[in-house]
Image 1 (cartoon, rainbow, N blue to C red):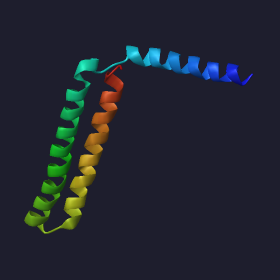
Image 2 (cartoon, rainbow, N blue to C red; image 1 turned 120 degrees about the horizontal axis):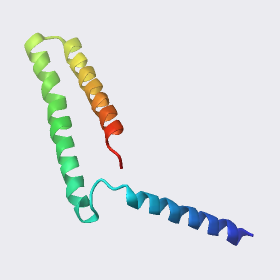
Image 3 (cartoon, rainbow, N blue to C red; image 1 turned 90 degrees about the vertical axis):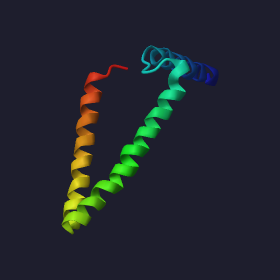
Length: 91
């Protein structure tokens, strides 16, 4: 009886893998390059922009509230982009 249960799990896993194979954003030989591009852009925009923009606002205005508000605006923009991408990309 246990063997049948494990067999069902194996079949479920195989079916899931078959469905996932149909939904790829990148071909298998380009996954490494795509991951590197994603990580590089994340560090560039998130790391550099996330510290440069608020610190520049504090330097110009002297207000930490305005700097925090810029972070909130950036987070809302990122949420909007994710919403648009989730509705348009079919993977």
